[in-house]
Image (tube, rainbow, N blue to C red; front, top):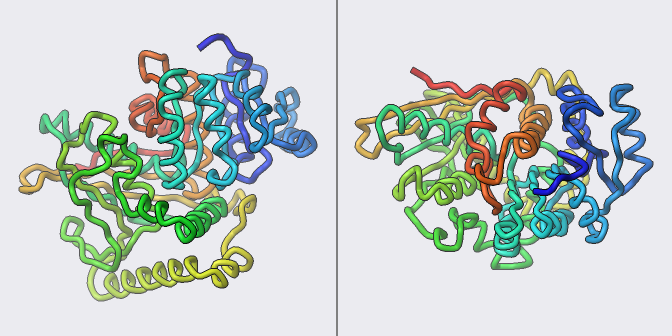
Length: 411
């Protein structure tokens, strides 16, 4: 990539999560130092306000005016930077032109999308252009799906070292979490529901666990899916469906395909939430399952979907206080074993902030930094990647050192 003015441009800095990413970058690198970065958005007035609120250290932070729906302004912006880091969602409504601009201009890109149908469209439309230009496009760089994707990558790396081969059957279980999903995540989920009701092809993509894989890998082993309360013999606990599983499982399966089936062609993967042992664990699993079912029904019906948007769910741009973010956390466990059960391994992944905002903003910021500072063209060619296949150990080191995550082998 030719010399460019900036290492990173943060698009969407005036939004709630975008501001948190900006705060992380200011704390980590300041302004005017070795890292050259800028804020971008469609309103200079709002950008100037955010710059003031970021404090005296950010006084010299460059500002770029660009509109998500103005391709000319996006081309001009991406040509000035090595990496674009964007929090402007729902991405199906506001992100397509930016991906196209990055793919065409050889600019690396990372986002917080968990929108499977949109990511599939971006893959089909821009994978070839990104490969030709050298742009590394990396979706799902927050709570969906870095803990799952990097956690499975970490597990399989340990398995290769210990057993000389990957583990074919892997389960991710959420042990505990404090803090909710972001308003942007809920907005994206509701937008996907609306798309699926309008377009049956979107519904077909949502049902395919291999939807994000390259075209020659969109079929494979029948995948398990936790859709109701069930007992998990591997962890000996009751479990309930996990709301992010429909996104995370697709990303993990894509990582397997992109790594030339490094987890095995018979790899099977699912996710769920632990609810405990005994009768109380079973009852909690049933309650959570019924609640998720009610949410799915409500989201599918127009009147209740409108009510959810207006009165119930957090709105994009809103979020918890700093105290609430710092009090949040998440802990997940990932269990891998071969089908005969002769070889097994378990790892944990934890984060020190609430999943939807505090941890997510740090994960995205460190992904952008890894793309800007750690990768050469030889490390990863242009294309549309997952966090683990694009960045691997380089990202894991940053997440542990600077984002409050811990990846740990459980003896």
